[in-house]
Length: 155
Picture 1: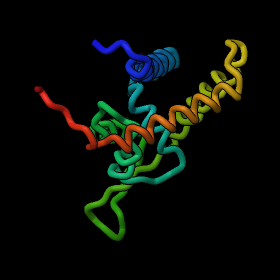
Picture 2: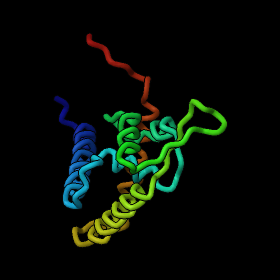
Picture 3: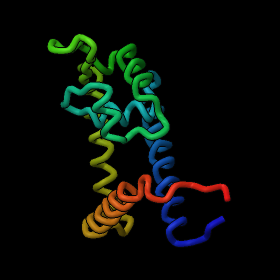
């Protein structure tokens, strides 16, 4: 197993993502919200005030390890999203937040704001967050550039 700084960073990013999803799950349960899961709530939050197709959601790439179509279907069934057929292309379905979806989105915004206000108490400054975001964006660009360059070999 590789024990480099690079591998440690990859592992930490993965662990942080899982931990964040666990945090969302706990907050949903604490709020008595049982008809939407953590991944679905993240999709819902990222839709925000937009009206998007499932394809557009998938292209945004926020939902690794999830089936966006299934999650959208469940959120429509549980009345977090409203779906409408495109007037121009009857094969295309667009989704947007319902009133219930907007309520949850607003609650998630308040949660994020509370987290943000507590960062300084844990020694995490605005500059630290700005630098972290820049480094993560650089990693994203690096990984995008690497796609298809090397390939795996079992030899």
